[in-house]
Length: 239
Image (cartoon, rainbow, N blue to C red; front, side, top):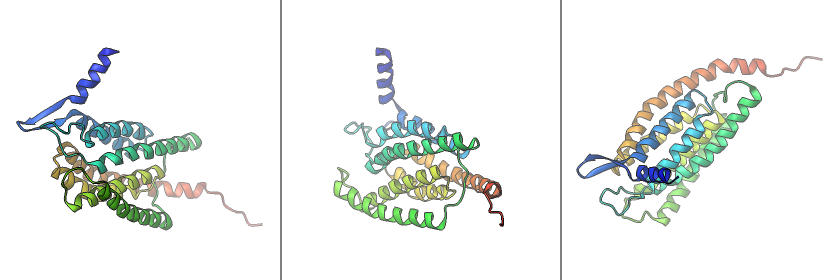
């Protein structure tokens, strides 16, 4: 197994030299490729969305914690971005279990898209708002380990909480989860560009268009399957 360990080490350290003074980790490229594949599986309501996404999360975690810190090619470690990969894995385990349970018990698609109810949406928005404020103060108290503007902590908190909310909403089958990703992308792309995570920023930009497409697809499915769910619901016969 020595050859396998050597292969892993070489992959971990491999970089694509973009310019004389800048390189991109292959882990970042491959991790984002898994992320895009996970999104495509999610669009198709396939259970494979979750395990494929977990692989991408693990790879991107190693990227965002800045393992290369201290080298000339090191990029800024984004701890909020890294932390959300951990929570992605936890939320994905829940989503994986929920979609497999739905498919095994119903025998149909792993999830039936629907809009969140007013109460569910209110709880998600209120909980997310509180979590963003809490994470902002926690992230600022912990510090980044290097000088950063105040908006760094707010941006990381927004991305962190929004990503978890979107993943949870996807697990529940809420059409709203696509809108959560749009809100995340609006902050995530500028931050990643600012800190030179160009492959991730490019993928986030691609996500913006992909999310709009996914939203339209899930919205159409929710309208098509809603009558079926209603007709399948039990009715009370008059005495």
